[in-house]
Image (cartoon, rainbow, N blue to C red; front, side, top):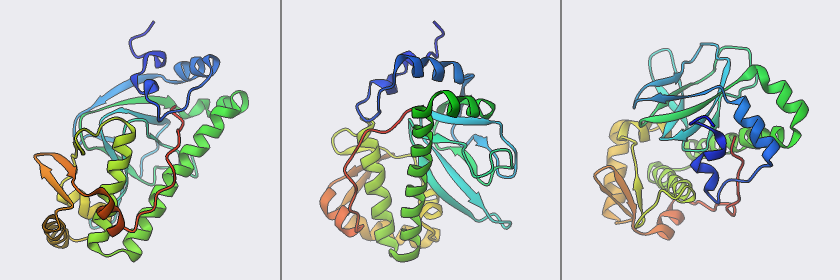
Amino acid sequence: MKTNDCKTCQLRNLDCFTTVSSKTLNFINQFKTREISLSSHALLTLEGETSNELYTIKSGWAFRYSTLSDGRRQILNILLPGDFTGLQAELDKPMQYGVEALTDCTVCVFPKQHLMRLYKNFPYLAHDLTWLAAHNELIVDENLVSVGQRNATERISLLFISLYKRAAQLGLVESKGFDFPLTQQHIADAMGLSLVHTNKSLAKLKKMELFEFDGQRLIIKQYEKLKKLADYYSLPLRQRPLV
């Protein structure tokens, strides 16, 4: 048995992920070509380059981003363990976004060339891929609502509460806190804010004692109040696919 066998993946022991049949798991194991390790700030994919691969974040944090010609960057969404990336409207065209590691990461790699075999022989797994793509779009839609309609403190509150919820699903929250590798620049780029406005908004939120930073850990002190400030009404948690 290879050391990176999907059957021994610790993520599959988490309740937040759906189980698959042994036949499907065997295919996923064959579908995966390798695992790669990325150091913090390393690029997994580059905008404008063609990629023949799809990826699942096995450990660590990363983010998808898009940049303008003058270097301004918009973070599209944050990728946590179990998140899938690499699908786009035209699979054989240059990537419309890049992916950068926020922390040291381990990434599972899958070739796009086997997608047709997957869709033909494993319709339930194909449904899972479609669900994952739709879920990623839902996260981007929520960020668009934030950038378009929420004020700065509401945007940051939404980011914190949504990442807290996702981290909790993965068992990463302990004593109401979790490792939080985002810098103020990351927060600004994700929420469409200037660095100065981000700094002022964080200071305002800290005075409200809704959260605190302990080194690189974010501790949510008043979950319901932060959730209300963000105008965040989440859907009930459900299990999600893991490829």
